[in-house]
Amino acid sequence: MSDCPNVTETKQNRVLTEMDWKEKWKTRQIGFHVKDVHPLFEEFLNEMISGKEKLNIFFPLCGKAVDMKWLADMGHNIVGADVCELGLKEFFEEQNIPYVEESVTEIPGAKVYKSTSGNISLYCCNIYDISDSVIGQFDGIWDRGALVAVNPCERERSVIVIIINVI
Ligand SMILES: C[S@@+](CC[C@H](N)C(=O)[O-])C[C@H]1O[C@@H](n2cnc3c(N)ncnc32)[C@H](O)[C@@H]1O
Image 1 (cartoon, rainbow, N blue to C red):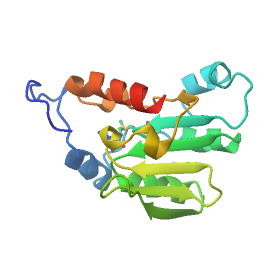
Image 2: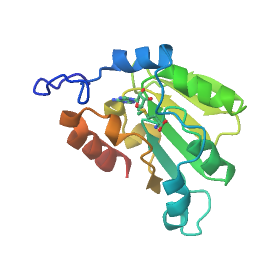
Image 3: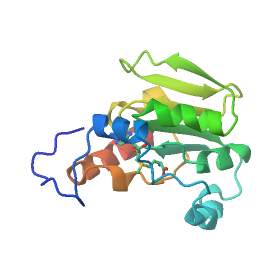
Image 4: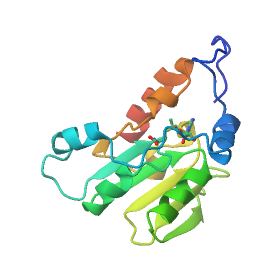
């Protein structure tokens, strides 16, 4: 995740490591989190859903985005991935969704937090460690503060990982 030797560390364009993100969550530097569903999601929802039911939607770098609950409440299946377990646990706790924690045998050290109702699974792992053999395949992806959070030199790699392994 920190393999960005050519990126100059500046205030605006800083290389963030997994540890940096964990520190941000721990020290509540989470200004990216908003309490409402993103207005663009509301605008483009119909285009993404096309009237279909029970779609599988992936949220890369999901944090505790409330958009996931919004879609789950419509009957869709949600899978998210984030390196920080704090945000994932807070998602379930703040949304009052009962959940269980399981290890992920295919990814050493990874965990998955699953709603007991079974329609939300949030993987605590690096986006580069996931594959469709672990998280399945999807009908749609919602980038909510995801690509923008990937280090510039890793953006191409992260898009390739998502497209090849997930779609
Ligand atoms: C800008 S935040 C966006 C969170 C959420 N999508 C939202 O809109 O509130 C970026 C998130 O990506 C996570 N993250 C950063 N790099 C990651 C990586 N390589 N793999 C998985 N998660 C990562 C961080 O922990 C953080 O929660």
